[in-house]
Length: 112
Length: 116
Image (cartoon, rainbow over all chains, first blue to last red; front, side):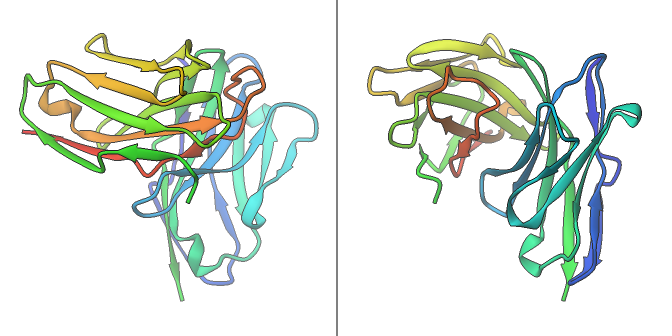
């Protein structure tokens, strides 16, 4: 069955430290991949997306993600975290025209 | 502010009742998407409308329905409500381009529904 997993429910990092949020998907072909961020009390904001081409994708707010087909992963990274990055992060996969699956989310806390 | 508006912000109702959630997309956006976010189910895509026509359907229950009007605002109708329907319902919109899901979606602030 198609699925998206985000192994880390909650991550805490210090401000200025690097960040990597993991995302794994289960799908036979190459999916469309997304990362969204949800700040407290807000809707979702698209950080970046991957459809094809270069497997390293640059997004907004200094985020990037790398698609690794062999590992079925699409991990989100940021070299230096800011306190304003504290939020919930969702990985999403679009596997066909009408099927979009979101991961359970990873909650990020940032220590000043 | 994404430019997407949703009303009401909060809604409290009883089991068995019917409610209507409203969404106004950003000016010029033709696609509207509805999502449900709950503690047990997580974030789920419900349905998409593009220029008045249903474009894609996700995990939407038969008790739920949606429509997009000529002025492009959309309504999500939830009927025969159950306790488990308590959730945050988001609307999002995107620009033209065939209403593809891959287009950047701009989310509204959501409507929080509580079914008692």
